[in-house]
Image 1: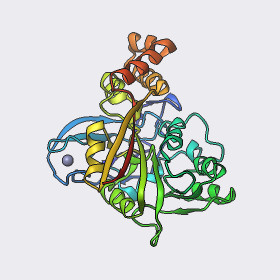
Image 2: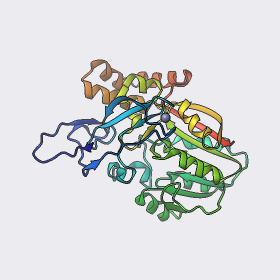
Image 3: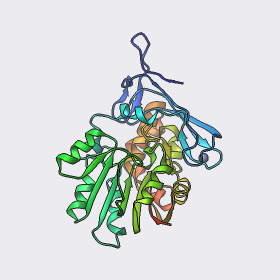
Image 4: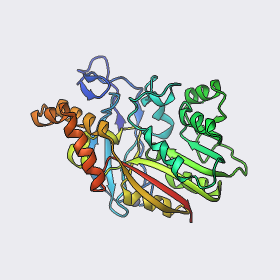
Length: 322
Ligand SMILES: [Zn+2]
């Protein structure tokens, strides 16, 4: 299956995105999508859910999303090969800027606050996977932590280095961590982007100090907004996120890779609700959704209800070695 670039002679159908409203898709090189077995259970037994677009940044392409009939994981299949995914990152992608703005859809600033509550060992060694431009590393370093970051994006690592933060370009497994151990390992808003999540979590388990904690946040594909907005829910962040977790599948991922979930909480993300409502309103010309998008109190209320009902847009898990 070819990922369709838009050619000169074709009529370009505009697509909807948070970043650009209704506009022609941003071009990407021709990419052949690859088939993948379930990243969580290795089965190849899926139920197609929908074909989605990049509703955050407006890059070209249709991305099929499926659900595994064996373990319930929702994932992209066929998907953009991990080696090609960099074409779908905005050069202004907020997480990779020095001053990470509020606009990044896939990483919660508040998520990092969890680390301040879980560290029973005081200041120790931190590994931040998907560290971006290093804002979180810098904050933790200022609090006395011995920090180290890993990110696959060269630009992000350059930013870290310019701030004097120790970070290495690459993925896990991949980056040479030798026999280093960490008291705290964080995956803030990046679990869904891992193409081989089991390999990553197993490797991280080997680098966990005794009594370490791992904090992972992910958008909740079973949240209220995901269910209401359907394919237009911007938490799918297609095609950058390749796996779309729920509390159950995220727990399974951790448990089968040597971790024990200590706490699973939900986070309010009214911005996700508002953006999803706006995208759905633009894409379907729905008056109801346009109204929902324009009423901040309403999307705020939906987010609060999500937390109460344990169906909010974001999941935060604290785990320790099993
Ligand atoms: Zn599966």
